[in-house]
Structure formats: C-alpha cells, structure tokens
Length: 124
Image 1 (cartoon, helix red, strand yellow):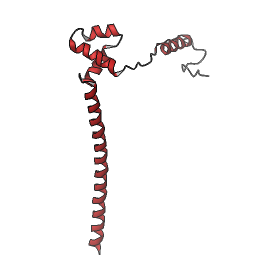
Image 2 (cartoon, rainbow, N blue to C red; image 1 turned 135 degrees about the vertical axis):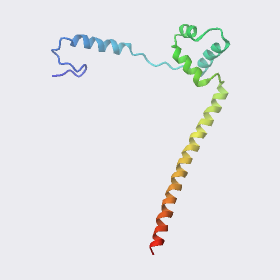
Image 3 (cartoon, rainbow, N blue to C red; image 1 turned 60 degrees about the horizontal axis):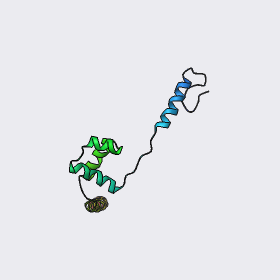
Image 4 (spheres, rainbow, N blue to C red; image 1 turned 45 degrees about the horizontal axis):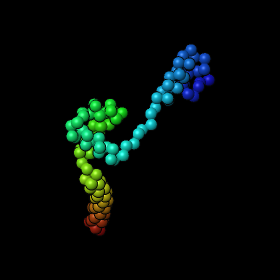
C-alpha cells in the first residue's frame, strides 16, 4: 500500500519527514504578483535618473533584481505610446508571417499539381 501524496509506504520510518517537507514546500509557494504598466515605467524612470541602482530599488520595493532587469530588457526605456506602437508592429508582423506561410503552402501545392499534370501529358 503506497500513499498518494509522498509515494512512500505508510510504515516507512521517514514518512513523517517527507510529509512535513511537502507541507513546508506547499506553504512556501507564493502567488505571482502583477504590476501595472505605470508602476513598471516609474521603476524604470527611477533607474534611468540614476537616483538608485537596481539593488537599492529591489530592496526598497520588495521586487527581485531579476524582475527589474527583465523589465529593463523588455521595455528598454520606452514610453507607453512607443510600446503600443511596437505591439501594433508585432501584431502586423505575426499576421504577415502567417499569410506568407499560407501563400508558400499554396505555391508548393500548385508546383506539385503542375508536375503531376505535366507527367500525365508526357505519357500520352
């Protein structure tokens, strides 16, 4: 008989330790926080002005340094209007790539059809 939670039989001498470990791990799981666009821009502006470095900002705001670096890499100091423009360009680019894939597939199908019909004419 094996317990579903830890995979150890109920008579195992380490069962309590394993179960306590699972309880601790499940309690440590944090929910992912979501930050508004304005907050991200404010943090990046504070970083850009040079008042504080990433380490000081992360301690003050309770955010990890990796999150601030990720925001900096993603937004690269752009404003909200520029971000909207970039999103529009990205959307258009995705649509164009999708259309290109469709047209390429249609072209390949037509090439194969031409080859098939040209072979049939040669056999007659």
